[in-house]
Length: 614
Image (cartoon, rainbow, N blue to C red; front, side):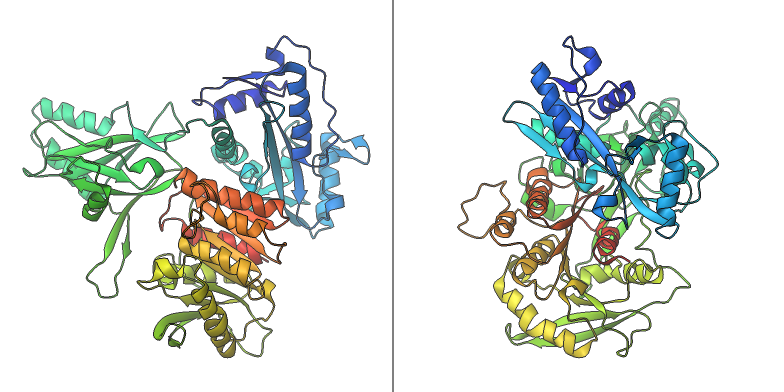
């Protein structure tokens, strides 16, 4: 399919061609077509307005499907009228030189205290016909936030003056003091996935596989096979000794592909093994194609896959798989990888049903910092209670986190309620997350109520009005009676993961007088009540919010890029779009993981900073 990119900039064209490679699109620029196209006057105040103006004008002039992009700079602390927006270089009716821009924005930031968070927000508009117009300007299409400083770096690059006063938000280092490869990644990789997803979704294209069987062989396996064929009798024992020391799988770089690495899964079999399947926890993971091969007549089984090198993912092994379509039975018989030293232990309280989850952290996966327990910082405390719930006729365990220095003589504390409390505490390291965020003053001291789930979790967390009554009429009154928390809804967060994220959104809808913030991690917005006649891809929760007047709520929503597209990513995007159209403040994140416990602890920190960050 031919598609026109509304630009004459060869660098921008090359960038977009790279990002859309493999999607079956022939991307042309204005310079590649015969029609004479006049420059489009950009009169918009927002990136999406300019992108729309350009795309519509180019489509009208050429009749070719066309997309255009635009971006703008937005600085925390400035009101809407003062934002640079799309007029970054044009100030007071004058186009500034590079040095004039540095001086101007140094003065702006000096007025904000010497440093300010900033973000380049991007927008794209795609016009396929007069009636098929698609546009997007979500947070995931924008660069990460960075810091603007009033003290410029000595280095300059022509055409990029603000890089001289820009710092990485994590390290605090100037962009120019970051290693070149990290700098390039910071500048270009942040929005690449969002561009691809935009076209995949709106053109009905097949996206890239995050994990696929590799055409290239592992050099480690090839070398081992060569040694065995040459009669080196110790080669296999040396290989197993290496695996014992370093663990599996084996990860190798690809010299000609910086986006992927080779990952070789290993299994040590015996004479009873006929086959071994690798089952990755990704959208397309329910497949029989990830089958290991046996190396010669040895006990070594292996599978080499090409994997995107910035993701985290879980996987399982199926030994002597029946190779049929009975996935329910297969899932019951899956096992972890005993050779992998990276695993999560999901403990059962009775210690008779512990689960071990093998996982892989790829070389360029973003480091998780907030879930790591730190020494030499002040730490909060956790206290356990058994509360009798009259509405349910049973006791329920809850736990409460109080920050270091908690005192009833202080101002009332911000507060949060999380369902699936045990998982948040024992698997997702939420206490460490809270301690770290509070110690670094990323959030103010916050009191957290953790509510355990039971065998009735699926029923309770499926938009259950009885559970809402338990929360509003019993748990929250108990929480307020025993802890010094704010009465102001804007100081309260209701949060959860998967069905808990769904429930958080439902509680926000029904009980915004209690909570002014909704934190949903991989919310199960595929949910529809019984007898609901909406289509499978419809988002029932979006419809419910669209039917009511705008509430006093702020949202943080996330979902993993490895999750099912229609049932998870698609419905989360639909909810985001409906909420934004209604005027809600929505912070949306697509993290580089799946529907598992590998990322939700770190993204909880992102959500807290987004909703109640200082």
